Image (cartoon, rainbow, N blue to C red; front, side):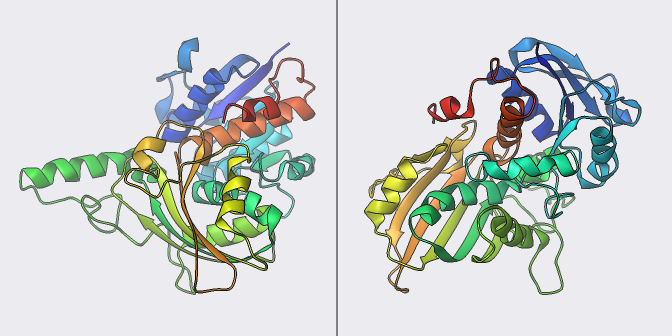
Length: 353
């Protein structure tokens, strides 16, 4: 017997992608329900090749009988409705920032820290990390396994899809307008995004970091190792889909480029494309629509005793959000909902990458 799954925030970028990924991976659901705010009531969304779903109103939705709910409606909405769903017996996998740093809520990337999943029983909620954090810890984990990481310096190049559909529309409209001499209108971003980059994602905090930068620091420590020093600069770039990161890693002992490349290649979910030649690396355009985290430009950092530089790219709507959430759901179904016979194991899915 299959599961009943609800996708909350089903009309947003990530919600729609969650439905696509559930369909693509043949998640063992007898019923999938699309849920969103009242203003989306009655709208239709695609459930991959499995048909069309009519959107139901979140405020009136009864979670009783729902086995797993994938949430991506915004942090304030999750704060109200995720605990309500958990109280009804639903296992909530929340993509927002609302619960990530709660000590009794596991923050999970299945390839990196699947053991943390067991903590979900405390509140019935599992947090999906920030999109930029997910792809970074995917690249860091196999390196941390072979030599303890001491410090990470990361600069991100984050696509506008991370800020929602309206942000994507703003990039499109500004780009088109520039060619006909229309003055760019700023609504979603603090400055013009077309033909520009903006070193500002989320709100500024007291120390000068933005909330996005803070997330990368604290989430990496929670997922990977609390002793790692992390500093981040997060930048919005005029790309529709796909985040890129320049990562400098300092280790406590030596890691050669060859050893790092081998460890990355053997890690599930990572594809290494690292040729020191024209086109020998991956950019967001090539990563869009793919599940893998791509690693390129692996090279020694000669300014510290034990250091490497990496270029890491992933589709922020897939592995950075929807895919990771569905992988968590698969792991929950296998290990906690006794669906092992109907869910292809995570280990076998990893072979696809």
